[in-house]
Image 1 (cartoon, rainbow, N blue to C red):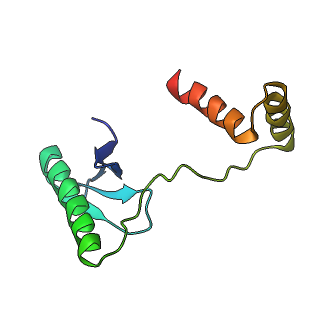
Image 2 (image 1 turned 90 degrees about the vertical axis):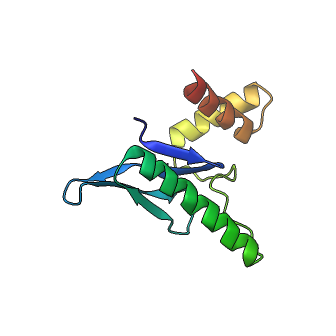
Amino acid sequence: MSNLLSYKNYNGTVEYSKEDGCLFGKVIGIKSLLSYEGDSVRELEHDFQNVIDEYLADCKERNVEPEQPYKGTFNVRISPELHRNIAVYAIEHGKSLNAAVEEAIGNMVYS
C-alpha cells in the first residue's frame, strides 16, 4: 500500500492509529486542514475523496480559489559550495540557475 492517496491533484497521508484501530490522514501541501479516516483502505480512500470534493464545493460556493498544493515554486537552502557549482554549471551550459536546478531535480526524480 502506498503511503499517499491522490485525487484531483491533491495528495494525502495514510496513517494507522493502533489505539483507535483505524486509518486516518490529512491532505498535504495546502494550508487548510483537511482530514479523513476510515476503518478500511476503501473507506479511507472514499472519505479522502469526499473531503476533497467538499472542499472544492465549499470554495466554489464562497467564490474563493481553492488552494493548489504545488505551484511550481519553492525555496531551497544549500551550501555555498553547491550554490557556486550549480551557478557555474548553468553559465557553462547557457542556462538560467532555475533551469539548471530543475534539470538536476528532474534527473534525480525521473531516473
